[in-house]
Length: 106
Image (tube, rainbow, N blue to C red; front, side, top):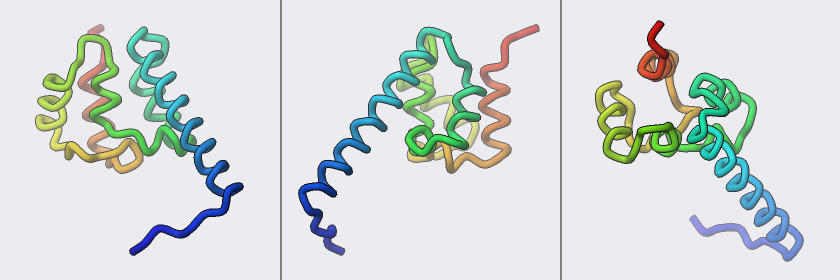
């Protein structure tokens, strides 16, 4: 299937939309890394924001403090979350398991 040909105006609009989505995702990763937002808040925001809903779960986990690619991959394997899964595609049980993994001890 070939991609549709876009006019100059349509191409500019698509580029602007993609740039905005990358900016939003980048800001969210920084906020996660600094602890400004929690994983639960990210999952809630992903329900409403298209740019966040399309983020890979692995990218979000890698942005968590003290998590890198290896630790994120191991957690995803433990919770039976596919490496290609996006936030929008998480099932209710997977969401609960992720939140439980990052729940602070009381």
